[in-house]
Image (cartoon, rainbow, N blue to C red; front, side, top):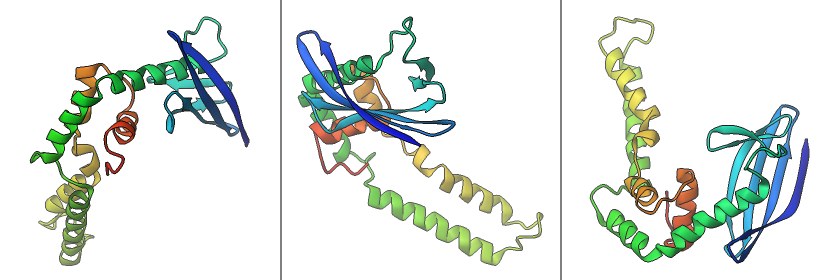
Length: 193
C-alpha cells in the first residue's frame, strides 16, 4: 500500500486556491481525495483510482498525467472551489430552500427513517417465524419478498428533493454527498442527512 499527500494550488480568476491531495494506492487501485484549505476549508471530493493512475471523474476514467486531458489535480481543486463559490454566492436563497424543506411534510429526520427501517425489519423477522422458509408455496413469501425489497431500497427510495432542486436551480455539480457537505458547511452544521 502506498499513501502520500502533496500540497496543491490553483488560480481561479484572481483567487489563489490552496489544497491537499491525498492518495491511497493498493495493488489494483485505490482512492484519491482533494481537500480545499483556502479560501474555503474542511471540504473535499474523492474518487477511485485504477492501477496506472487513471481516476474516475464524473463517471469517466481519466489519466491525470495525460497532457491531452483537461482534468488535472489542480483542475479538481479549481472545480471544487467554483462549486463552493457558486453555493456561497446563493447562500441566502439556498438557506430559504433548505429551511422550507425541513419545515415541510416531505422532510423526515434520520430518527424517523431509522424507526421505519427497524419496523420493517421487525415485521420481516416476525413473518419468518410464522412461515415455512423451506416451502416456496408458503402464502407469506410474497409479502416477505416485498418487505425485503422495501427494506433494501429504503435509503435509495428516500429522495432529498431539496438537494436536486439546489443543484438544478443554481447549477451546482457534484455528487449528492458533496452538496450535502456544502449544506453542512454553509447552512446547517447539524444537518443529519
